[in-house]
Length: 304
Image (cartoon, rainbow, N blue to C red; front, side, top):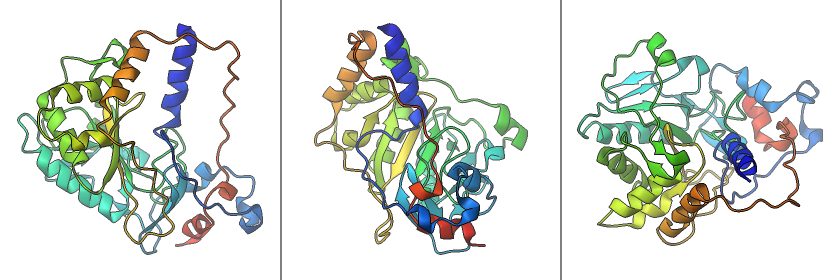
């Protein structure tokens, strides 16, 4: 029983935040894919691009099946942020994403003990499937933000590769640990209160803790969604930009603050439900091909 629970947890983590119901993007047909791209994993093609395309900024497809035209690079350092793990070249996003990071990090810098934010993965230069890790982060609209409060914003390139964030979880994510602070609560609240934000993924114990601690307006809690992993960082997902017809939004979160649902997650962590001996085995992960993505993604790859 415990073994099955751990397997399911690991599988959910590898999905990389694809979670909850997501609308399907329009996909191309195999006939539209150039011969040079057929039979090649899309992640290999997108991972080989070092710069954004010289196109107008447009996200195409869905968060876990799409790409980004005209992506812009978050500066490696700013007055209230630093991009981490620069060797991955994943500090690219839609222009609105960079604006959001500037705004949220500026707020974070007003919190006691925080100089700003350490920013993890956003997207590759042209979005698309990544060589490793996430299944989402393909549109330049997803941002991983470290839980570690920055004490300084002059980290060297080498330090950004070696320093690690800190975990906030206890009892496999059922509760927060002593690293959790009111400042984490306020930063997540500010992010969730931003109209640009669709939802935020964080481990279940943090969601329950915020539900218990919030005594004022609770509307923002609806956007805080429990999901596996997400105890070293929280994951912000922005809405599709207005007018971006090729971008497919995720379905809105269920009505209400979602606190009861998060409590159910916690109970399932503490008391895993019995396994179903007849449950089918998970299907092997299939890497995306260009035929799986919106046909505009071919132009994104072919553009200078």
